Length: 193
Image (tube, rainbow, N blue to C red; front, top):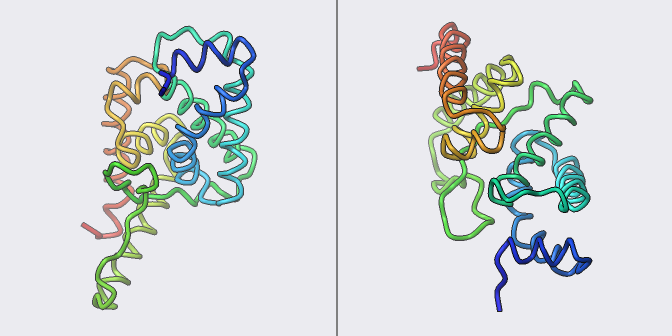
């Protein structure tokens, strides 16, 4: 029998640690995908995910079901990953821009190059574009960076971003607009588009 998140949470609060283990298995891949896109380091992403699940477990009794468990968890993962960035300034310029692939499998979060014989010049140009966009994103304020990463990179809906960041949808829209505007200005001189 497959339990709902709510049932697993209630079981976990009552002391059933295996129920929380099911939640971990259910959401660990997506949590890792979010963290790796922010911190850009496998070991640090694993640490952030582990810390996030520990924080979630400790706070589970105060979870009020106003949002879905995964939205609440992804907020914790995002904040834990961004906290690591704040602590380790060396990661400030390493913000990813890969878009997640849509698929049924939680492991499909990275773009794969299908054509191995692609023109070297196009690859070099693409790499320069990726690098320029990463650098531009790293120059955004924390608030704008969070919105861009969650909406454009992780492809959460406006409502989901609102729930993850705990801000109104209108604020998400305005931050997204400002982030795009600033990115356009930062990238204008690069003549990439």
